[in-house]
Image 1: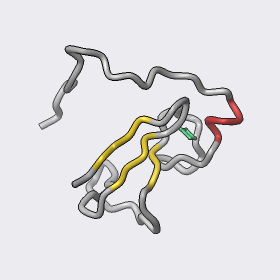
Image 2: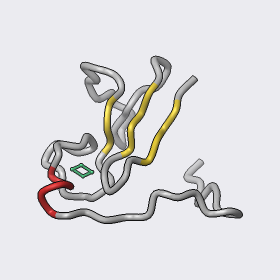
Image 3: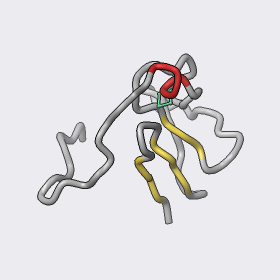
Length: 76
Ligand code: FES
């Protein structure tokens, strides 16, 4: 099972062995350890991965699930 957890004022924590991060062409990003963290603030210099910059810039965001919220637009 894969779990994506929204961390407080930080990245998405991705946990699970059956998940792969790919770029727009489908090429795989090297994931050297798990869980791994995806940038949510947009300021990482190592996108799509978090490099800790969110803490330096004071990133603040909502982390709570909104009732009725859900899946957004699909590209498929
Ligand atoms: S969430 Fe960590 S650098 Fe963007």
